[in-house]
Length: 101
Image: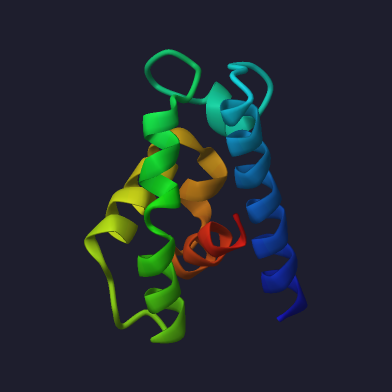
């Protein structure tokens, strides 16, 4: 249980720092931004995909994974395309990380 909590916290910090750099207008530094398949940077539109999934993520976590909204599905796909850590994380871990933003 402690390992899961620590993993979620580290993932949340990683995702949060990636978004902070993106919102500040930088394109270097974080693993999530650096692993982009296209340009190596994130755009505000990319961040919106994840931020707009917060309500769906809350429903997913509250229902223990039984409610899966379209915005959450898009955000999970988006995160996994951009970050190797996200590829190894469960849907629940990523949803919890989205809520931590």
